Length: 104
Image (cartoon, rainbow, N blue to C red):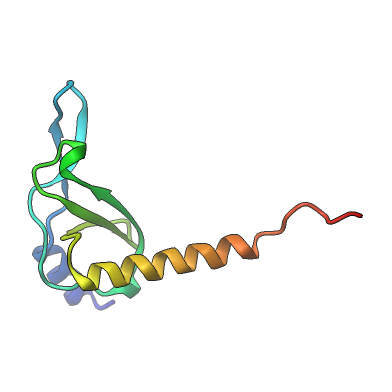
């Protein structure tokens, strides 16, 4: 990814901010989400931060290959596509892991 594109992506997205939860727990929550699609090829992981988790803004937090965290709206089709691709990649990786030797 070109440095200019990476910088513009970071400017468009809000990273999770540490806020205090209801039980004095520090919880990572997004203050806002980007409506602009994030390129799926720069994403390596994701997690959900939802209202039920104590966050005011529901979000999917994507972790990029460079370790940046980008907040995205969970209800967007482009977010679903990235999540499906990540799950598919993870499933393929788990199938490729060697298991215990087979014996009769």
